[in-house]
Image (cartoon, rainbow, N blue to C red; front, side):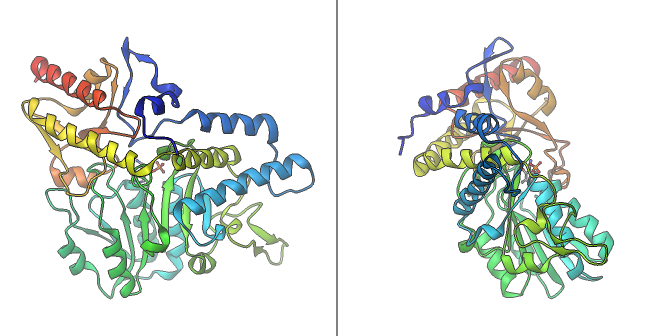
Length: 406
Ligand code: PMP
């Protein structure tokens, strides 16, 4: 394993060594989408140069190579999540499609009066699909409260978890606050009542590796592009028994066993949920991203990320009027903030002029913005390739912006 040398790691990410607006790029928008190491770009390039063909058609050598690469990536994902079988790993377009797939698949189990428990800190991707299913079935979407510090209110959870609850769909890590939710405890309590559980891992997997068997959740979903892989692909892990029991999401090629005008039957898992030609090169790219992460010293990487957060927290008081939204005890390095007298979008624009990329706005979490009574926040989200020097640069820039514009 490579020692954790952040400068060496940065050289693996070609996009990072460029100037933006005449300044060295400081990329702190990893929560929206992360950058890709050269090994991912190379794997996708090599796939197209040497082995591209459609998969699972089996009549020729290129087809076999493409299928081997594609299914090899599925095995890499299985191992990353510690799932029991590749039958439980379904390719989707991303987190959003994975949640829509599960919501639609569970619809036949839902009826009027049933409740789907989500939280007040969910991304819209883990609210709207459930609302759409609720509309169809008469079920109700119920949010667990959040505390001012940005932690789940566990008393509210205990109160809301009831005989009416059918589904618990909750984020592992908040994209706005960085809060790591106590998902073991939540899943344990839900399972004790026979509630189906889904964890949105979109913001968790870039920072630590989940173990779906230890978590014992029914579904776990994430997007490749936030995990240093390509856009256009994501993962749904689901327990085989539940997936077997769910109707397909889309119809078409690949997902069938036999088609006739009288009767069509479904393919086995995971293919039943993979209608049409899949995102093959993207699967290969995601596999390469996980291989890259597996080559890093993970504990050292997590310690380095934590050091970024600690330094950022120390520097907050150097910017008059700056405050952090989301001060949970368990956090990944994500910092939502506001500065008195400045609109978040202006902060974003002024930072961009200095080559610093952050995200501003509602972060697809409008209910959470309403809870905090803000139209949006500015959010700096760090990855393992960010440096302490970049944290200093962010704060030097914020001090200047505050002095000149607040
Ligand atoms: N859930 C969370 C917690 C997220 O942060 C995101 C992306 N911002 C999503 C879901 C949606 O992911 P995607 O747009 O890749 O489908």
